[in-house]
Every structure is written in C-alpha cells, then in structure tokens.
Amino acid sequence: MSHRRLGTDGIAPYLFLGPLLLLLGAFILYPVVMNLMSSFTDWKGYGAQKWIGLANYREMLQDGSFWTSIQNTVILVAYIPVSTIVTIFVAALLREGLRGWKAYRAILFIPNLLGPVVIGLIFSIYLRADGALNLLLKSITGSTVGFLTSTTAAINSVGIIQVVWVHLGFGLIYFLAAMNGIEPEIYEAALIDGAGFWQTMVRVTVPSIRFAVEFWVVFSFIEVFARMFSFIYTLTQGGPGFGTFTLEYGIFAQGFQKFRAGYSGAWSMVLFLFCAAISVAQIRLMRRRGV
Amino acid sequence: MKRVSSIDLFNRVLAQLLLILLVIASLLPLYNVVIASFKSSHAFALSSPFLPPASFSGENYVYAALHGHLLKFAINSLILVPSGLVVYIVVCLCAGYAFGKMRFGAKRPLFLLVLFLMIFPQLLLATEVFRLIAFMHLTDSGLGVILTWVAYFSPFGTYIMTTYFSDMPYDLVEAARLDGASQLRTLVSIMAPLAMPMIATIAIIGFQAMWNELPFSMLILQSQTSRTLTLGIAMLGGEYGLSVPAMSAALIIAMIVPLAMFLVFQRRVTLGVTAGAVKG
Image (tube, rainbow over all chains, first blue to last red; front, side):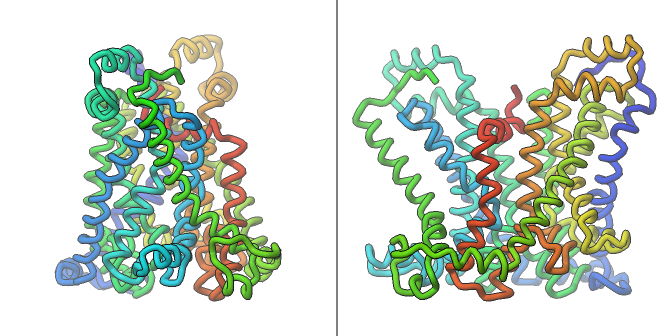
C-alpha cells in the first residue's frame, strides 16, 4: 500500500469498502461474536436459550469425541511436513527440466480442480473394502486394508489424500514459480562445486525459496484446520465411529445433527483460537513480504 | 525453462519412472470412475474395475442426469455461480482499489481486519449464518447463497486486488484525478481495464471456490430442486443408495465444467495459484 501523507480521500474510500465491510460484518464477524455468546447457553439452534455459564466447556473437556478430534487433527498436522517434503522434492525433480515436466505438472494438478466433494466421493468408492484398490492389493499381497473401515487407516487415508496428494499439483506450480526466480548462476556454481541433486536441493533450492516454504506451511495449516469438512463429509461422514472427526466435523455434528448449537459453540471457540493463531501467522508473513 | 541440471542420465531415467508411477497412482482412481460410468450394473459386478467395458453403455448418464436430477443441479450451478461471481468481482474490485490506491485514516486496521477474516472455516460461521439467512427470509434462495459466498470468498479476492493495485504507479490515478475524473470514474475507465488480467485471475479463483462450495449451500439450499451440482452429488449416495456405475456417471458429469475451465484457462488457473502468495 502506498503511504502518502497528502491528506485523505474523504468518505469515498469508505463507500468503496462499504459492500465488503457490510458483508464481512454480517457473515463473518457477527457470527464469530455470536458463537462466543451462544457457547455459554443451552441453545438448540432454534427456540429459546438459557445462560448456563461454562457448562458447555466443562462438558467438552470430558467429551471423548472432542479429544479424538484433537488427536485426529494432530495426525493430519503430522502430514504437513510430509506434504512439504514430497512436494518440494517433486518440484525440484521437475525443475531439472525433465522431459514432459509441463505435462506432469498439469496432470498432477487435476485433483485440485475437481474439488473436495468430487474427490471425497471418488475415494469413497475407490477405497471400499471391495473397491478397486483393495482388489489390486489383494492380487499383489493377498490381503486387504480397511482404508475406510479401520479408524487408524481412515484418518491416515484422509491425511495422505487430502493433505499430501490433492495439494501436490498446486504445490508444484507454486514451488516451480518460486524456483524460477532463483538465479541460474547459483546453480552453475553449485554444479562446478560438484554438488549433486540432493545437495543442490537442500543447500541451494530450499534456502532460496524459504518464503515460499513458509507460506506453504501456513497454507497447509489452513487446509487442515479450516478446509477439511467437505472432503471428510463425502469420504467417511466423520467415521468410522469418530475415526475422522475433526473440530470442524464436531461442530457440524453437534450443531446440525444433534441440534446442540450452544454446545457446538464451545467447539467453535476452540477452532476459532487455532484459526486466529494461523491467521496471525499468515498476516505476519504477508507483511514481511511487504504487503 | 533453461536448466542447469545436477542429475545424470541414469538418475533422469529413474526420476522419469518415479513420476510416471506417481501419475499412474494419481489417475487410477479417476480411470476407475470413468470406466465404471460406462458399465451396466450387471457388467460392473462381473468385471474387473480395471478393465474397460465390453460394450459402452450410456444408461448411467441418462439415469444420473434425469433420475438423479443432475441436469437440474447443473443448471442451478450455472446460474448461481456466475451471478455470485459478478457480485464478487465488483466487491473485490472496489475494495481492492480503495485499499490499494486511496488514502484514508482507517486503512491499516481495516485491511488487517480483512486479512484476519480470510481463513475462518465455514462451519465456524454456519449456525449464525443460517440464523441470519432465515432472519432475512432468504432460506432456500439463490440470493442467500450468493451473499454468503461473496462474503466468505471476497477477503482473498480483495487481498489479491489490493496487492495488484498498490503495485501500480500512483501517477495514473493522479493524472485522472487532476483531469477532474471522480474516483468511481478513475476506477471504471482507467484502473479496472489495466487490472483486467488480475480480475480474470480472481474470477477463476472465485469460480472454483463457489463451484466446489459445500457447507453453506447445504445449509441454505434446503429443497432438492434448488441444489447446486456440488451439493447435489454430495447428497446423492445417501438419498438414493446409487449403484457405483450410476454414482460414477454422476461424478463425471460434475467434473465436466471444472475440467473444461482448466483446459480453456490453463495459464490463468496456473497464475491463480501464485497470485495469492508469491508476489510478481
């Protein structure tokens, strides 16, 4: 933003911002504040509500499904470094100018285009007990995996598909663009020094795209905490049991399936705190970038 | 791209093999959906999911489009998403111009607020958005969904437009203003045309976001006839207990528009990925 100190443009800027601020106020700011309020009530999502103090929070801390959601979220977070390393590795490979690198980049981007609902439904078929992947596994190894029927396997399926695989194509475009900005001379120097692929990647490429890596990690945290619902809803509906419950899914289940809006408000405040922290981290990065 | 390569021929072959494996693993689920969609239920039950059907059948597509109402849902999406997109572009363009090129006291705190509100998940807002929509009598209406989508997705579009406008030379605005043009006129006839590439980029980003949106549409569009395509297919399995071939045909129908968009606007979609984070 340009920070000229030559007077101001009067009320015109506020008129230009009017529609945005009105919408943000009504659909984002107001709901967050109201969530906080209703988290202290026994509101069902309709009808009357009674103030019950911290009862919802107390209940939440003793609710097994809450801790399962946290645990599942931790598992998904653990896939962030995996996704980061895999994506940078494949991007570094493509950067070497392998034949067909553009085609690889385009094909691997397809999962991003299809959106979480289509991807979730595709895998709900593909990963079934009698689905294509299990047929393949059975013919090779003789045994099958309960991708969607075992709680451990299900949450890891979510991590591998939605945290690592879906974003791979997105990350390739993103990291290749960042790597494109690195001076070729640095690579020439590394080559003369006898650096191989791994050394070049770790010592030259990664340090040169540090900013992009940091953005990527923040982006991945946003995906894990705030963009998982549609995929989980279509893949497993949070199951088996609470196997793929996350905070988002818990809010949905409590608020819209069990009609306990007040109680889901308590879950919402926990998710809000996580998201607020991620948001602040993102803003700090953006500001360092000079926005 | 000109490349200084640090890997030798042997490893290049190895890398190619690895990438081909990755591509096969990535396309296999999609391939299964494609071939299942052309099989009759009978043929699907008897044949391997990896082998194409002996005879291609279009019955699943007819069934999904008509019996599964996908045709109706697709029309809904093709009305709602472009309408939402127009409002979204106007909102982001105006706000981006104000943040990028206008001077006012509360600029910094307001811009930080917009950035802060960018990432909150739909479910965090859903209960109250639902109440608000009901209060405005917009339940089950296209307008309700459009307003919610625009509110939810415009912080990111605004951020991108702001960075774009703030990088443009200030002289452009000053010259127009000295000629007596109003702020609105400056935006519409000078700045907006110059920002066309970035407007196209946020249009693609907004399109994908709205096209694929589930939670808000699920809460607001309650009657079956008003569903979007994304919402429609998300509800299909549960309501009808569709067979795998019919579900596969439904999924293919749902993929057509996003894939066509990618084929037509591939370069712009690619730019959209980098617009958010890496400037320039």
